[in-house]
Structure formats: C-alpha cells, structure tokens
Length: 479
Image (cartoon, rainbow, N blue to C red; front, top):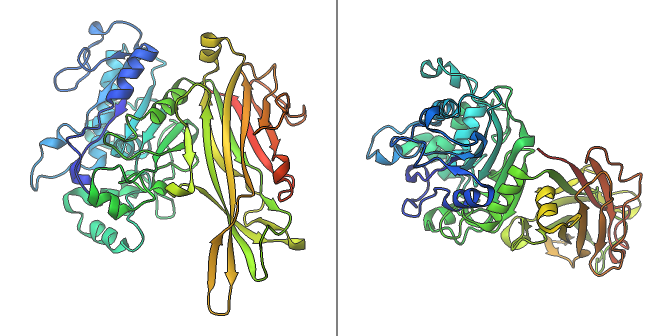
C-alpha cells in the first residue's frame, strides 16, 4: 500500500494541482507484477476497506491506497490541523480493516510505500510508543509491517539553507498552520525519540521491521521543483523541498537520483524511483558496495610546499544492464557526492580520519529469478562508475585557500553477478582492461547460501596512489 501526501499547509508552497498520488507506480505494479488495484473495487466511497466476501484473488497481490490527506484538504482558515499522531491513528485503523478485508490470514504483513510526509506518518505508526494507548485504538492490535520505502521524506525535518536558521527558529516557535510539525521538538515527540537521539534514528516500538527493511529514495534536483519559495529557502543540496541530508533513515538502504520532490519531473513518477522500488520489493539478492579504508601512499601530482589533502570527493553512478537509467547517481554537480576527510599519517602518507571505516557507496537489489526466466542469462550484469578527486588546502601568510585537484581514480567496474551465487564467482573488469574472467580468490569469496564478500583492487593506473584499497562488494539473499 502507499501513503501519499500533498498538503500545502505543511509545505513552503503548494503543488495541489499536480497531485502526488502514485499513479505511475500503481499502474506499473498492476501491469508488470499482476497486482489488483483495490481503489475502485474493494474500498467504499469514504476509503474504507470492505468485507472479505467481496475480495477475490490472492490478498498478497492487492494494492491499497491510504489517502489520509483527503479530509485535510477540506480544512480552511484557522481550523485545527491534525497532528502526525492523528494520521498514524487513522493508518492503524485502515490497516486493521484491510487485514479483515483480506480474511485475517495469520501471516498477514504489509509493505508500506510513502511519499514525503507519508513517510513520517509511517514512521510514527512504527515508532510511537504511545500510539496504541489512545482510547480510539484500544480495540485494535498493530498490523505487522514487512518493509518501508520512502520517496523524498524529511526524516530529519525541513532544514533551510545556510544563513536561514533564524527562519527555522521562528517556524518552530510560532507553529503557524502546523509548520512546526517538522521541527526537532515535534518530531521527537511523535517518533518517541529523546534529545540525544538523531531525528533520522529508527527505533521500532514493537517487534516490527528494523533499518534493514527500509529503503529511502533521495532527490537531488532542486531546480525542477515548481515551488519557487521552497527551493530557494532550502537551497541547491535538496530536491526542492527536502534537503539531501534529511531524506534518509540512519543505516537504511538508499539511492540518490536526479529528480525533484514532486511535479512532472519528480521522484514519484520517475523511472529511477520505480526501478529501485520493484527491486527492493521483489528482488532476491541484496548487494552492498563500499570503499575499503582509503590510504594515499604518496603526494599527488602538482602538490606544492604548504599544501595538503583536506578530503577526497567521490562521485558514484550505479547502472544495471537493461535499465534505461541509473539506479543511483551521486555527483558533485548535484551536491550529493561523498566526502571522505583525510589527515596526514605516518611516513608522509594520507589516511582517512576514521582510518578503519569503510565508505559506503550504495545498497541495491537484484532480481535473479526474473533475469534467468526472461533471457536465460546466468549472470546479472551491473556497472559502477567511480571518480575520486582530492581537494587541497594551501596555508599562506594571510589566509588558507582550498582548491580541487585532478582525479586520481576515474573508471568503471563491470560486474557479472551469477544467478546462483553458491556455484559461480563474480566476474569483473575495470574499464578496458582485458580481465573479463577475473574472479576474486576463494579466500575472498567464501559464499554460503548466497552470502559472500568480494574485494576488487583498483585498476593499475590508480595503484600508484593507493595501497591495498579497492571496492568491497557484499552479497546476501533477500526476501
């Protein structure tokens, strides 16, 4: 089911006319995956699930839309705006009735797909420890949730661009028309977080899902958002409404795509969003890509006296063969690149400030069964483009200046992941290097039930700078 949202009173502007109902994903899931849309068949005119006697087919293949914003759109003027807990309460009742409409099977669970504030409503349902103590919910039991997928949700609230922090303070102080909903105090209340916990920290109130079953889609194109006021208040490092650094849950899987918050070029109806969604919901292999701890063995080209490396900036693109778009795009031009702080170590080398920490690049999902069925190929083929650029500081007599260097790694890793991970190793090659048959050693590629860790050394032309570095790929079965 999805939790859509399109509420002007909580935005910095209004895009009501555009609508944020998941039309494209809904239609495509129905057509591509054989789902049944319950909207006009199994729901009453007031959006209530109907009895089991009217529902035919497999309940596991039904798609429900919880339109919690409908009643909100009727409110005018100074009418009281519902709190997030009120919406979560309605969601709890909706899920209960939905379960009854499906015959109350013992194994019943739901997958929640939410846009914008809908993701906060879902988190409130999952995290708020007082929700089911409400008198209206005492007759109900929580409905188990299997996964959560969010599009452009402000998991850390709405953050304005540098220099506009005073506007956030006024918003949270006055709370006009519910605008303080996205302030730290209000969010900690409805997410049951204390002052020491980060807003994007996920703590389930019950034996529900953890971060492992959550995926966050993050938009990086603020220019295409139609609301001028919000995109200039939030700034370039955003989707036009939600800052990039606010749009994910801590430790969750996530993807960055060059799309706006909503509108004709928005996240919801994007090809990138759909491809990440279906792989998260229906994939059977989970893969995580990271960089081994970075060590630069020697000074880089054109590094002069008084200059040192301050950080490495990493651009990453992830593509799957057969898809018309990237699953993940992190680049400096969108303010979404990865920054790895560097310090000078022993013997003139440069090391990460967190020297033992891997740098996470991407978490994705593959559909091996569909690949084998459709084309008969024994391999799932993907490519990871990675660019590493050092940034320097120069300490002068008057001031310290910063400048960008030349890329010390700019290549594409081609991967062939076997459909049966237990029987075959992963083939790989960098760029034009003729090592198509290269397979990680047996020690590096111990696989049990689809779970394995693989290390891919950097290409030869980058090894002059790096020592013992490379990409790390971890795979495991995903249900």
